[in-house]
Image (cartoon, rainbow, N blue to C red):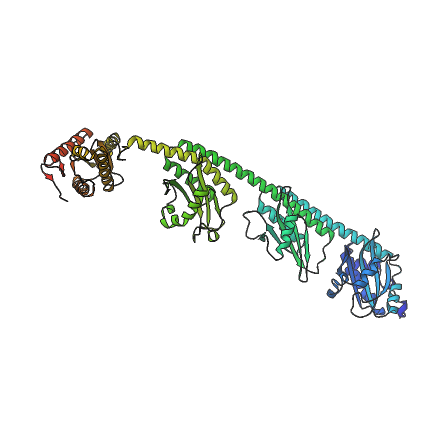
Length: 628
């Protein structure tokens, strides 16, 4: 057996053994593992206690092979730091000190160089200087080991860099070949998981994108006093941020595009992980690739949305210009907004003579008084300030608070500087609408207000043509038109002709102004006692007419009596009216408008002759008088 000081590593370790232990891989990590096993065996005669092999990363050393407890020791060891600051003429030295042990020891330190750059360190620990010197003496022929280690390091580094470069190329092709934001985000996360399999990856996003639930996405919140602050800094500065504390390591990389920063990548790992320069470069390049791809996808989506919005506005304007009926216009706009916005409710509210009126064609929920009461503060605010309202969540809004409808868009409709009304869009989901929806609604309101105004003016003009200015009843010509239509389409109907008794005496006694007011009062009573489909008209002078489609004679007589009584007791000054009644039925001989009017006129004449303040049916031989 050889004496202790004659035992050398060279005698027990050969390049062939070393390569065999590494499965003949010229790879730094495989060679390090093989060397560790062989050196432990070779160092036994010299009482070798521990071996630790480190790889240099900037000013730190990451444990490649050794005991788990040796991780991170070199980062804060002043002795090893001061030793490495010296200029070394040799790649191996015997150093005294507690480098990787807690007790005093002697260490054989082998510095690993590649092209004059220190890239690694092997530390062998012995209890005595004699043991360390004896072991070191066996390493005088370490040149082959240095060369092989250097080749393995270069090969490993090249392989890692090449792998990352290839991965970046694949990600770049896939990201820039897709305009799907979900696909871009998936490629980024997948690439990071491949390179850093033991790291947690999260994404902070600043845009309102619809993202798959299986992606680890966090909202980027400003002003929060937690680790999100670094994500905020990365976003605002557009620079990589690194945070290492006692528990974990966090890296925040901004997703930079050419026009903006679209989010932040967060990488989370154990605190003892050492980041290589090429790791940071990979993260930065991947983040920039992802940022540019997201920007392209966002711009593409924006251009598509803009094109769709312009098509919608153009189509809407074209359709609105073809529709002159206000109800048709409102119904069309309501359907367009429901479909384009994915909304649940759409309402059009008109400001008219200090009153708020919901226009026909809005969704039915706007007929609910309780909802209008909730909306009233918002209406008043918009009436005085004319500013559009965007409510993301009504629970936190000061003007509109509703337990069911959480999202609201409200845009004023202004024409020639005059506020006409408001268009309102509601949905029960909070934050249902985007800012793009808000801007689109403003454009639609702007383009449709003129059409609404024209439709309202058209209907007002139509109403003026068919309406008596004094009584607001329909004109005689409109009444004749509707009776003719009823004679053709309905099975039966009744015609009532009223005349104010002693009207000349009223004018002579009280004046023509009072006479006009009397006619207005009688017209009001007529409208209060009929259905929506009935037609009340001013026949001429003090004569008023009423046509009741699909009403039989008996019911018509009751209505006539009710009106005669109401006039007698509800007018001021008190007056009376007489009424002539005529009717028709399809079972009898065909009747004409002229015949129907003549019979009612005959009935009115008979009622007057019999004492006034009564009704008379010309087809009957008797008269009916109901006293109040």
